[in-house]
Length: 93
Image (cartoon, rainbow, N blue to C red; front, side):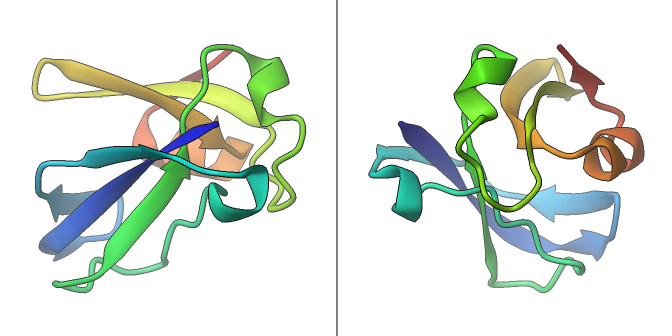
């Protein structure tokens, strides 16, 4: 499975400023959605990428929905829970 590492540049929650993400593939245990509760500059958020809800079945953090988030003309689909999807304006499959 693959995950995206998203550098946080600052901002406020639900609208963090982020830098260019990098994608790496790893084992399920090392590729779990782990979003922080702040926009701390210098931190990195990790999200498990997905193409369908079944891709999120083994995500043990409760992020069991495949949701697409769109910003600045681009989009990214990753495993999230309903709260994250609602706060971030995501659409879940």
